[in-house]
Length: 295
Image (cartoon, rainbow, N blue to C red; front, side):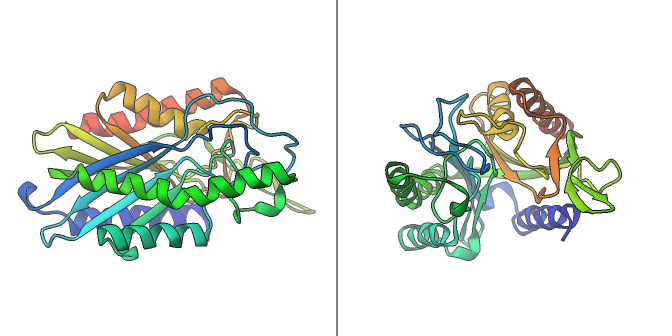
């Protein structure tokens, strides 16, 4: 499936949520939660098999965040975003089981997403065969992974505890730093820029406001790999910078990034911190444009 069709699926999911919850403001509630995911100690990093050493510090923290909303039937729905390359099916199931048993939210009303940053820690069972872990590093990965369901559950719980009467709105922005990376050659497909390949430069945005109209949370998506950076520091890449950019410009708001299906997209050009910051600002500005249009 192409990135365009997959991104359309994500957009349709977000639109479906809005249509399902398109009720009077008093009929449902919204809430947000967050928790730091940055490892306390150096750890092996995910995404690139060529790495040969653990992390060396961070550019900013990695986050787990959640947006929850309750409809007029009393059913609660939750969307979770993670500044990680991904989580495995067992971690997702363990998390969902906690959320359902403790909060009564079934798996069908829980969305788990990861930004797919290539500057986060390794999570066991997710591409684990790529990494040359020694015993000490493997133990750190195991401990970190074992902590993940409780960490993710905690942000859903916080979002549920934060529920208050509110509204949801949607919009679509635009930014164009994603470029197709499936170049066709006489010898086959290679990982290189394809200027005529399909792209999806839309930025779907979901806005959650309190009863007073103040923005509580903004969830946004983009179809592009988080591969601007390839160094040894923990970072959310452009998506992490976009979230912090929005939270700086929108005090009191939780900004959440959900990766679109950009497996055939790279941020171009790439490989410098300044570019990651630039793309974060570009993506953040696309969201701010939507907010301005809705004002």
